Image 1 (cartoon, one colour):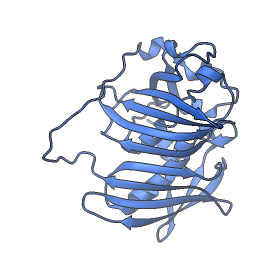
Image 2 (image 1 turned 120 degrees about the vertical axis):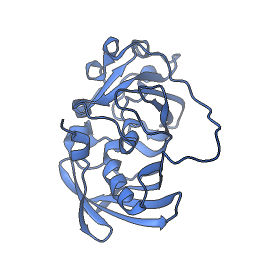
Image 3 (image 1 turned 180 degrees about the horizontal axis):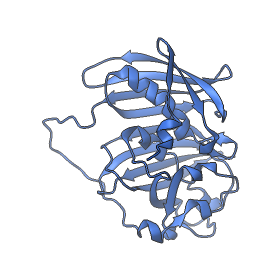
Length: 264
C-alpha cells in the first residue's frame, strides 16, 4: 500500500541538524500548502533529534505561506533534553525566508505512570462514514487539492445554508485517501485538515490561514477512521479561535488542538 503522507513529508539530511524536503502541491488549499501538512516535515526533523518516539505537544507559528512544488530547508536544535520529555525547535525555510517555526515536546505516549486517573472525553455519535458527505462535494470558494490526499466525511447535520445564528461546529470522519493508517506524527495534520467552521455561519469566504496551531497528543491512534469535532466560539477583528478533538475508531481521544486563524 502506498503512503503518500509519509512519502510527501519525507526529510533528507544535508548536514548536522539540517535537512531538506520537497513540498507537494497535492496538499494545497487554494495556492498554498495546508499548514498541518507543511509542519510535518519539520516535526520529523525534530523527532530525529529528540531521542523519543512521540510528539506530546506541538506548537507552530506560521510566518508566511509555503511554496508548493518547491524544496524546503529545515534546521532544528534541542532546547532541553530529558529522560521523560525533550523539547526541540525546528524551522522550515523556502527561498531564503522562514515559513514556520515549531517547538515540540517529545516523549513516549505509551509510558505508564503510578497515576490511574482517567477522565475520558466521550466520542460524539455520528452516522457511518458512507452516510456522511464527502468534503470534495462541498463548496469552499477555492480549489482544495487536499481532497485528493485527505478523505473527510462530514456529518449531514453540519451541512446547511450559512446561518449566523447556528453553532459554528463541524463533526465528521477522516482518513488518508490512499488507505494508509493514522500515526502519532500525522495527528497534527488531521487537526488542521477540516474545513473552517466559520463557513457554517458566514458561508465559504475562501482561505482561512492558520497563524498559530497547538496540538496535544493524548494516545496512539488505532488503525482506521478518525472522528473529528471542530468548533469556533470566538471571532473578533478578522481572527478566530478554533478547537479540535480527535478520536480513533475505538472511541479513544487521541489528540486535542487549538488554533488562531485569519479570515481572508
